[in-house]
Amino acid sequence: AEGAVTTVDAVASTETPAVGDTVTLTATAANADAASVTWAQTAGPAVTLSGTTGPSVTFTAPAQPVTFTATVTGTGGTATDTITVTPQDQVVITAAELRTRQAEWRISGTAAITTLNPVSIHLYEGGQPGRLIGEATPEAAGDWTLRVRGGIQPNGATQVIAVSEKGGVSAPFTFSTRR
View 1 (cartoon, rainbow, N blue to C red):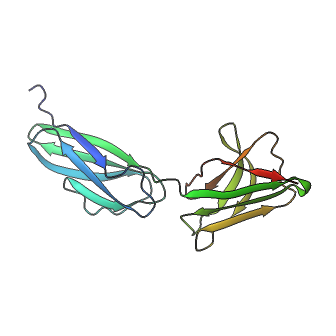
View 2: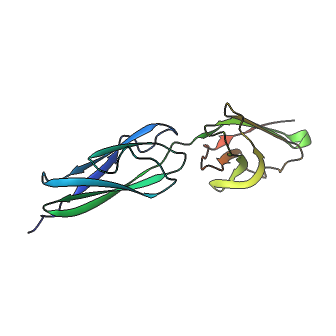
View 3: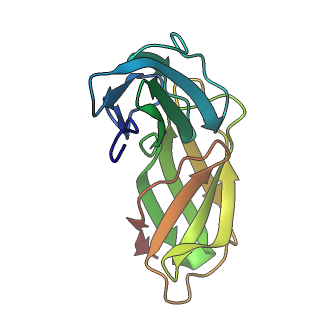
């Protein structure tokens, strides 16, 4: 019959959580004959779902995007919907300065993930991370500092950006200069 196949809409309580937040996924079927909902993770680092069946499940947000598929089965057929949850940027630049006399960069910031998560700091060129200025390692509290003498020259760039190995990307940050 026309329109007999169940349709489903999978949604997240937030599609941009902070790392470590609990996220609830909910599948809503368009017709009332939905007999079962099954959840499966299809991409991203493995997370533990509170269950694999039922209209709602929860998980703890990792540092990278994760994708799930909800499959609804009912008397009208089967339908699926996919949802991707992408964590907020977890790397922040709090200060950036170029001291031109010795080509010394002083850049600091924070990272939410501190274990095995080096942060590389680049010039922001052409709308993306460009030439590498250097790399910093977050301390236990999440703070990191980069101090490089004889570093690269900006050659027209006015901003820097930080990228963590665990997938965090800061907003572009306008650096100051002084002699």
